[in-house]
Length: 184
Image (tube, rainbow, N blue to C red; front, top):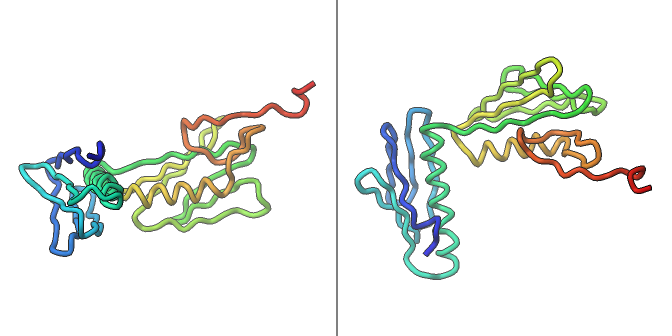
């Protein structure tokens, strides 16, 4: 049995979950509503404030999907009740971030600024304090979309291993390399 898949999901107060005949799970909470289509072989049951996900057989395909759909539904419940947040740090001389409406403007050492149109489900704030690196905070109820947007921003200027410059998650540990002069 899947360690993740067999865990029940506790449904907090204020969150409503419904499963229709096509196996589409809809989760509504104080922060919004999310829907995902679950594979027809995976059964989703709601009893006494807990949600359980079960699989019909021990086939490799069913085993793979069992934990996946349990995690997706758990992220939906967590998202509509608490929401998700990711913080990105811009490390480098002259790196700047500003927010204009739903467009994030980044100065990342290129000859031009980079503009990113954020999806309507993702909200952002850009904070720049004197003497500290700019921090971009992303918030959303959809964990998958939030991770995708954060990865896209991070890919614009990946952290390089010699000086540690680039876009990184707050708290991310960057493995540094010694330069050519350190080998003598």
